[in-house]
Amino acid sequence: MSIGLHKAQVAAPHNRYAVGLHHLAFHLSSRSEIDRFHEFLVSERIKVLDAPAEYDYTPGYYAVFFADPDGIKLEVVYEPRFDEPAA
Image (cartoon, rainbow, N blue to C red; front, side, top):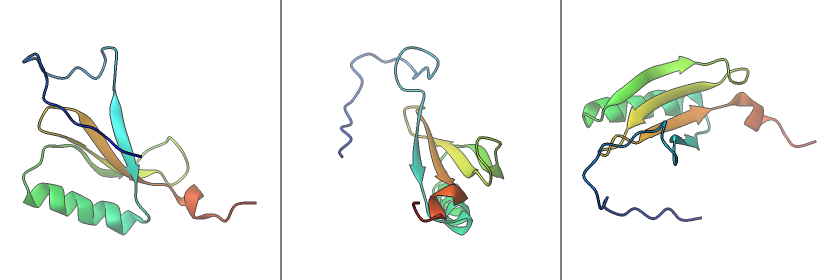
């Protein structure tokens, strides 16, 4: 997998409700990793949109949401369901 980043050709803020990318999520392996990542965001003065919290998406869903310099919403999330061995 790769992600290519390119400078925008038009100077306009990102609108996650327009056609295209809403947000991008990355899975981490524990709640403590989410908390440590939040500490990193704060120390680097990266815009935190929503501090670490549980959300109702799936049982135990724990995430922090933040914005990249272009305003694109990013997320790191821990979901206990991925800890379970495959059946």
